[in-house]
Structures are given as structure tokens and as C-alpha cells.
Length: 75
Image 1 (cartoon, rainbow, N blue to C red):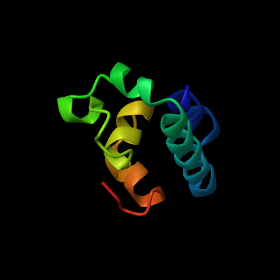
Image 2: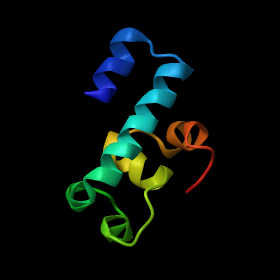
Image 3: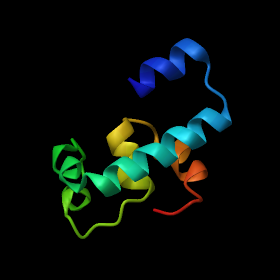
């Protein structure tokens, strides 16, 4: 859904920042969702792995560079 909105509405930085913020909050409140990630790195699914740019980018299916900038550069 996030990808579809990005293409259709030519989303700007404020929307990207808000999407990343909401995704992070959602993942913090629903840690079981990390288990559903189709990430290459199996560590991302670990309950002890921090919810940072890598996890959020896998969740949103966005490039890590897009998420990292909005997330403050944290991995």
C-alpha cells in the first residue's frame, strides 16, 4: 500500500517521514509482525533486533536509504 501511494501521489518528504514514524510505532506495538518480514537477513525477524531503518524498510518494502534518512540514519 505504501508503495502504491508513493507512485500515485508523488509523495514528498513530510509524508515519507510520517509513514516511517507510523510504521515504527506499529511495529513496536505489534512485534509479531517482524516474523512476517520477507527479509534476506534472518536477524531482522529476531524479537531482540531493534526496530530501525532495516526493519522498517523491509516492512514497507522501501529502499533502506529512504527510510534511513527519515528515521535519523539509525540502522
